Image (cartoon, rainbow, N blue to C red; front, top):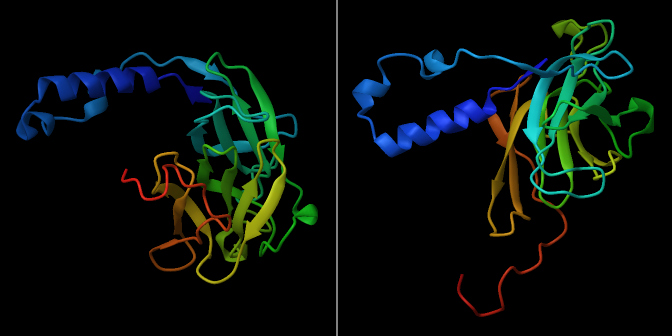
Length: 219
């Protein structure tokens, strides 16, 4: 279930910045101590019964089926509640209306993905309408059967258009974008893996981004 605590966190952060409280005061206790009201926004279980929501991200810009402000949630478990077997990303409005953004078929991927599909918490929505999600698949929900997986790139319609696999991609678990341009269109995606050591960076987007300012003009 998704809990409606984001607005309270934002308000709390603004108050903390405005007051410029000393570090010693901030360390007095957990910052969530003042959050007491928890309300249910909606269920993240899609029609196929996938459970265990792991990745969650806010859509930054409307494109195709993506709507700015909606939440995307990746499910790690299938309806059998086996870890590393979930194949769906659900989309939820701020009012709690849910629909399935993507149901990924491991047999119909445009590229390789070692072990199949088990969507992890590595989830990013890009401003140009693409969604990247990590796959850390298992056969039976047990760590002993976990495979390297891949990074799946989906378009704004929820279709997988590319996969990144092999090399340093070995059980992608979490991810965040590193943006380098004012239009947030380029840069690398940094992800964390669980089947190898440490964090690595995936490749840059293949398409060269459009120049956000006239040639020769400084930003």
